[in-house]
Structures are given as structure tokens and as C-alpha cells.
Length: 456
Image 1 (cartoon, rainbow, N blue to C red):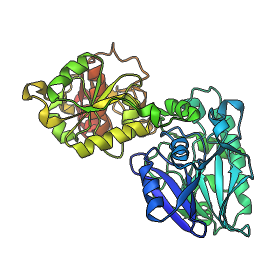
Image 2 (image 1 turned 135 degrees about the horizontal axis):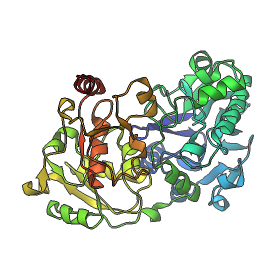
Image 3 (image 1 turned 135 degrees about the vertical axis):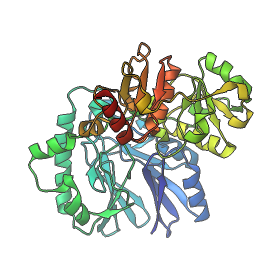
């Protein structure tokens, strides 16, 4: 057997290729839109990708399943579980999987196991030998290292009211299906630390069912009532783009959907583009932007949080130009934006080509200098704020900024935990005409300075 795990750091997402060298064929599970890595691996190892599948309709990235099947001529397999509203729109081009159905790749068998709760149609895939022995489970967004897939997204991200408690109860029943498996069974989750699909995901690439029975809160003996309470407690706010991803992945995008003009823009036109309703996304790191800020651009540094923040601050349906410090980083940013569903990306510009006259200092203020009559906006998560907050501050999580009415906000100073989210959130507010300034300090400093000043 050939086994390869592919991990996307920005999405904290894992996909897998499993092949039988006897027949030279492979299956890919949960591919992203970065198809070249699967195609290159298959080519280097003399394999044909003959099957493609996914665990569920993803909310956090654009699935590459349909396009990979088109590119390779592979059989596409998708879930046929769940109610009608969770059926794939392109199901007529795929084999539909029910609980217990199998996919054969030489001597390898992949078995579909219906494990709803995170989503109604969710499948776990059991990896079996030809004689029926289960070696491991590809659990997608069902079981993670130390956590389970959150059951609240239908309500908090997709807008389906009063569904989270029912989904948590269904998730509890899915956990019971694991009772028949031995502790030695390997678990390959679909996400690692940094994903918003759970609240406390571990970072290791694999685990065992025995380890999860010892350490995972969701696999402990407990009543359904206790499980539901724990499953719904302290879930982080989902990034704003999750609802769009559900729609996109149900429809199934192909390469033609990304066929937009792409060019290099001279830096001296960026100010004009901003005036024409373009979104300029500055992907440089914070130190580079502080003294060279392009007014009304969105400053979202390229890094592990890029997709979560961009997916919450960048608007769908408006053209995008990426501002970067190198061709390599510009291409990486474009690929990341495409991976979460942004299609109208017109091109990129390099910061070295922007006229000096177009730059200005980024709006920031030290916490001890914030006037007493200026509001302080907290863009941290609800769980962070529940632990401690700046007295008198307003709560507006970064993931909710795009869906909030912010245009009429009064002058404000923005803080978070380390200053990074405040930096991005401030640029968003300024782009909407809000006189905002960033508190680019740690929460402890902001809290201490503000508390001392306002209680003096």
C-alpha cells in the first residue's frame, strides 16, 4: 500500500492519497483545489488516480473533488446520506454513497460509514484489507485529535435556526458507532490545530482510537445530555466565508469558474482601483505596513491565519487585487484566496512599485494614549472575552465584521489578543470610513494600561 498525507497549513486541512501498487491505482480523499500536488505525486510513483471522494460538503475550503475527477477521468464518489437540502447538485456525474458502500482499489477497500452530526451527510471512510480487516478511519470532520467536529455550524454559519442541539444529539449517536472498533485502529482526521471546524484540535497528523478514548472529551463515557452541553460550549465564532463555501461546494466548482483575467498592475494605479470599488489586499507582514500603508486597503498578512481572516473581511462579488512584496508571495496569496472561493481576482501588484507619495502611516494608538471618550472595540472571540475583558469595551469579533453595520461607528481603538487581529480589523473599518486606530499591543498591556487610566 502507498499512503500519502497532504497538509495545507493555511487551511489546517489534510487530504490523503491511498494506492494499491499491484494495480497502480489510487484514491484521493478530501482534495483541495491545489490539484498539482496529487497529480505530481501520482506521476512520480507511476499511479493512476482512479477514484476521488470527500467526507462531506466542506465549509472551510473549496473542494477539488469534482475538478480532480474531471482532470484524471476518475470515478467521483459523494455522500447520498442526509436530507434533500444536503444533496450534491452534481450528483448525476458521481457515484452516490450510502452507509456501508465500498470503493475497491486493487486489494484495498474503502468503506463509507455514515457519521452525521458535524453535517447531516458526513461520511467517515474505513480503510480495509481485502479480507475485511479495518486498519484505520479517515474521519474528516468527525473525530479530531482531542476533539470532535463542531455540530453548531448549520446554525451559526449556514443560518439554519434551531439546529445545533439536534445536530449535537446526532453527533452523540455517531460516536456510539465507534464502539465496535479496537483501540489499535488508526485515526486520520481531516483537520489539525488552527482549523475553525472544532474548538481544541490537536496538531499531530494521526492518532489511535485508544488514545482518543483516553484523552478526547467527546469519546468519554457520558450521558447524551452532558455530551450535548459540552459539544456546544465555547465554540469559536466561525469565519464569515463558511456559508459561501457550503453553497459553492454543494454546486461543485470546476476550473472554468476560476477563468478570470489575471495581470500585474503598476503600483501607481492602486489608489484609482480602490476608488473604483476594487479590494486591494495587502499581504505583507505588519512591520512592512506600519509606515507604508495604502489608505483603504485591507492589511491581511500572509500566514496561517490568512484564509480565516480574509474569508471574514474580504467581500465576495467585488474584484480583488493582491499587493505583495514578491511574485512568490503574491501567487501564494492568490492560491489561498481561490482555495476559499474568491474567483474575481484580477491580478497583483508589488509594493516596490507603489509611489512613495501614496503611502501613509498605519492608524495606531498606544493604549495609554486612548482618550477617555473613545470607544474600545474588542475583536477577539467570545471565549477569550469571557475570560477577561477591557472594562467598557464593545465586542465585535473579527469574524462578524463583514456582516455587521459598521459604517456609522464612532471613532474607536481596536484590540485583540496579540495585536494581529486588531491590525487586520482596523484596516477593514478604515476601508468602510470608520475613524479606527489599532492597539497593536498584547491584551495584557491594553487591559493594564486602560484599566489604570480609566480608574485613576
